[in-house]
Length: 120
Image 1: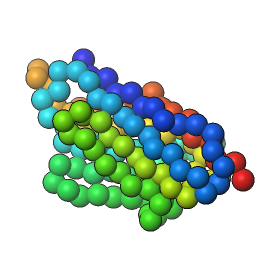
Image 2 (image 1 turned 90 degrees about the vertical axis):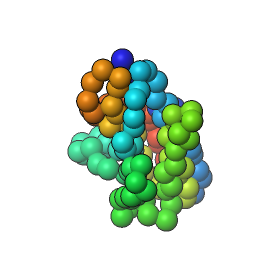
Image 3 (image 1 turned 120 degrees about the vertical axis):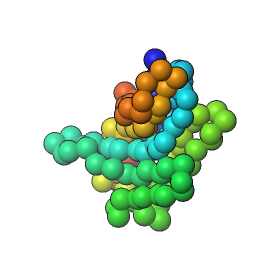
């Protein structure tokens, strides 16, 4: 079975930084893409940043220039570096990955989420 686990969230003041981590484990054959999503109270879940093995990277307009996505392929960990945080960044952040296992074709997997709160 595949498991994704986020960590690194917390409470910070506006202008400060956080780095989120997402660790993937299980019988993984190949990870085609990984991304970060977030969901604030009363709002739908939205894409924050994503990338693929081919090198394509997408950022939401609201975080361009402030957030950076990266990956350690050997450790199977994805990161989201968040700088110059704003109160509107407050949300639960979720890790997502499209993964092929040894026994199954590709499927989407989600972590449980980590809370990020930014005060004024």
